[in-house]
Image (cartoon, rainbow, N blue to C red; front, side, top):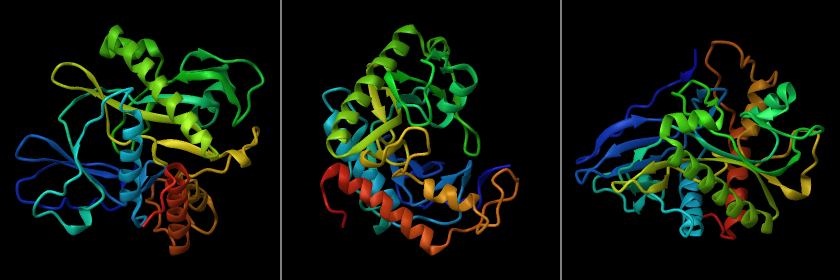
Length: 300
């Protein structure tokens, strides 16, 4: 059992139809048929959406995605039409709302890995492969790969794990031509972002993207891009293969939930507890640090 500890009720806004409440984002349709995406301050861990918000998280994710979209525009178009808040929406939607093109989303999480960690490390330790791609002997947690690899997954429902799959399964589901385009675009975007992050003293270990097709069947990148929720960012000056790396993501939350202080067992079926204020502040500070180091802009 997992999912929402306390599932929020959707905000009712004149002219908007609520479509979906996700782990972080609430989706609506406006009267023009466009998608309205609102990033909340919700956070998740161990397949649970936690009962405690991280202040400003949704705004940070949205603003960082917009910054990246500008730097990737020559590689792939994105789904953003406007950042204008719909009339009648809460004031808090400012800075966390995207008006987006209506796409036919592809059922694939497009993951690029330049370093070995996470679920990739688990598969490597067992089989010396990641998503069926054979890797050299002798790699450890945090090792840089000889070259970035495309390791797709099938997107799961809230409370479930995404499922890593071989490339051949992607081709079977979306067709060989689209699968090849997904792989090429994912690795091109990862390469651009990796180089930009590296210039700022940050390692982009891995990241995931979601793509859709517009009315003329062109590939468009959607959802969020290159945020601490969708990517593993490591401080380059602290990188040391062979151990878990310091990270700009929500590892602070995972560590606290696994600690005796939380009193909770991630393997249990009971909902996780609320986060203490000190943990919330540490996580918020980490998200802000990632934003400021990547963009060079001060968070305000």
